[in-house]
Length: 415
Image 1: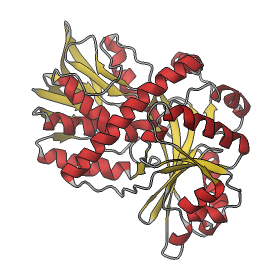
Image 2: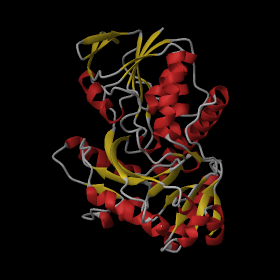
Image 3: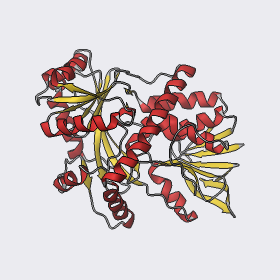
Image 4: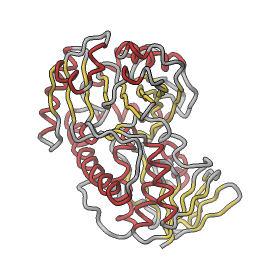
């Protein structure tokens, strides 16, 4: 069957890979000249199956209220005259209720474990390289209240089959010795030993090359303008003076997915959650002062990963529409925190700054599956977990398109 995958981020490329492996003739389309050049380009690098849980949880709402008006807040709501933004925010508040959080956490935990296994199998089959570091992810705390909450939550997540180990301050420093020089005292943390980190952009590029060897055709510089439908089927995708025909279509356009789907009467609760990252290039004399394990700073909601001679620190979430401009204040706050945690990096020079739009649902559970149109499928809305869930989502999507039930317990979309 001919399948057109619309969007060539890490989700679209993994979808194309698994569809080709399932025997389909695949065309991958993106508005950029290459793959992985938007949200997948400079994210935090964590494949965090052990921490794949919703942002929407009971403890978040009081923090959001405290963060209002703070330009450097981890989660910042910038009110706009945008009904979709307000509707998303209200839905997010509802998803913070305890029962909904637990349900969403189970959904994400199951898909994340499946995705981790799929990535491991893909790596074994292809030998793909992406600056992988397999030392788990250490979630560390510099405030006692955060540590107490994390320790309690770790026990709850272990009941869902997720390995989380509570660590003392000394154990955290043993796992990542550079934390010993931190200007803010590390009080303890939680380690997810089965997690890993790696460069999502490098992975996406390399997998796209492997997909090309399987016959996947890439069409770049082609923004999708609209979908042409008749009855209950999509006939084609219109883009930049071209009409792309296929037997089935997969929408993996990240934050832009709902804009393409709305004229077809399909509504999905995906809205952009803007994030930032800084990337430092480490001269040989500074490399020893930079962490090698992947870390999450609970106080500032930042993730830190090492890619060879580069250190990436990413985080913050900004509900501000489709604005991709870089806010210098927020990036400066990230850099300041890096220097507090790793003072030996103060001479590393100017970082590379980046901002991208994470396609977030209020529940953090992605929209994967069928639509009311018989040959139109979705694989979008992964929020901050796109890299973590990519392999499993792509494989599950390929199974659905092929008419098979995926081997994972997840509420796939059916209408």
